[in-house]
Image (tube, rainbow, N blue to C red; front, side, top):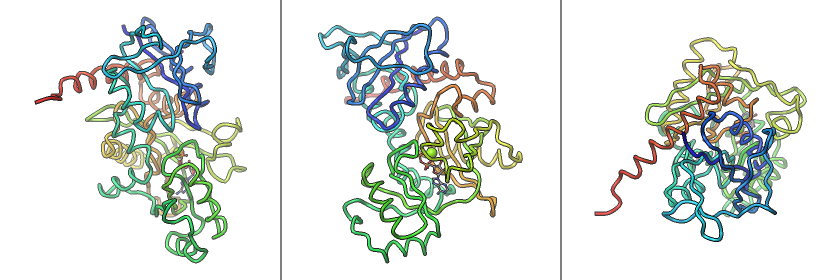
Length: 358
Ligand SMILES: Nc1ncnc2c1ncn2[C@@H]1O[C@H](COP(=O)(O)OP(=O)(O)O)[C@@H](O)[C@H]1O
Ligand SMILES: [Mg+2]
């Protein structure tokens, strides 16, 4: 049994979602482990939190009476007065910036603390839609055609240049920041003026913005777990309610009837096998580890399958697709967390066994 730190909140647009995911992780942690809660506020400051009783559906972060924590290079975690906080393993239950993109993973590796999920590289590449797509394309995996526009080079984009993007990629188009999540900064645009304005909004979130062909069809997602030989679970489907143009922020979080999350997805066996095989390859390709959810777009007319994106720290609330899909494959939430913890220790010993001197 281990002392398991759940790291949640964070300096990210997905702060609240993380607090909800973390509550579900706490609730489902195997009896016998001792849980330690570390809440990160919106400024990025870490605080040790009390374990609430009974377990709530969303974890709060108290920054007033709580003790601040810091990460010590080579020495783990400590309070500001220098007293150490001993933990055996950290589960980052963080979504988006600073938590899902490799930055927190780098901090934990520097501190020599075992942690669950993808490493620095897998997290960073998985978070960056442009980088991930370039690797998938190189590996011959199906991705939606796109162009990436840079804030510094393309901010003065003309109406005619915007028009060329429609000619090349079709109409409508999707515009999205390379590094973001929860549909933040994502827009569907039908004309040049909308495209230019959507680019400006997306550049607020990242200097690289993708302009992508719109795929008309179904949204299928697939949980994958493991390290060098990852395994995909039965896929699920997101069916956004009709009043939402796509699976936007409101459909995800503010409208309780915003979307139907169906597990398993109603798909022919051949399509399921194809999606699972592509999901495992996409996962290995970006060097994801521990867990990820690979999201697909299934084109209605052609029946073609495209990888949309990978989420290396997917939503973990009790109604989220990731834990529901692993459960559909016979691994309940508690067992899934046990696998993540075991993987964290294995990866840690691997790293510690490497030679860092000559
Ligand atoms: N190329 C596309 N074609 C059709 N729908 C898309 C496309 N790109 C994104 N979407 C819609 O926008 C949503 C959010 O985009 P996504 O790329 O998944 O970003 P995020 O990381 O914010 O979830 C998707 O779930 C889907 O509904
Ligand atoms: Mg998405």
